[in-house]
Length: 221
Ligand code: HEM
Image (cartoon, rainbow, N blue to C red):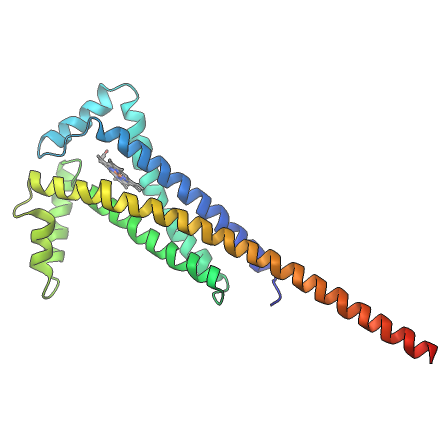
């Protein structure tokens, strides 16, 4: 298969973006771990502990800012990556692996942002979460069970603890694993492209030699 210049550029952009994604994920995960040293997942206490992190803990404000920026930026980059992957060719295993892991990562990143909504226990987060719970409850068949699982009844300390567990253990671990898979699959497809280019060059030079050989034997006869 012939690789066009466009293919090459798209593939390189996809690899660069997957490096950015993994870097931002590691920044978010490491600053999240630092926040967890002081963060208290309880109604009322959550807000106070984050305020204390920002105002009293040395460089606490920096880690909080870095976590927020990395956590939100990774969603934007993952969405750009989906567009980049869409523009590329999709009939290779490596491309498919990158495409699926890219979509899964975007879902994880959105999930991380969604579960963080109530973690700060401020007015905005509380009311946004209440509205979204209404939407969840409206899902046919499983809506009310899902609401019960997420909140544990009314929005309370139990809700924060559940969402904190989903955010900091389940989704963040899954996001890190998927970002590694995504980077590996973009590197794999770059390697595959280089191999294809070498094969094309070899077959081009072979056919040139054949043509030259045929020309010489015709001239001799
Ligand atoms: C790949 C890993 C992670 C990502 C992408 C991520 C993403 C996010 C996002 C988008 C927010 C909302 C920021 C905002 O207010 O706009 C947030 C908040 C938060 N995250 Fe994470 N997170 C990750 C890992 C973790 C881990 C491992 C922990 C703890 C062990 C953690 C603890 C928190 C806490 C306590 C907040 C609330 C902080 C605040 O409101 O300032 N996160 N995270």
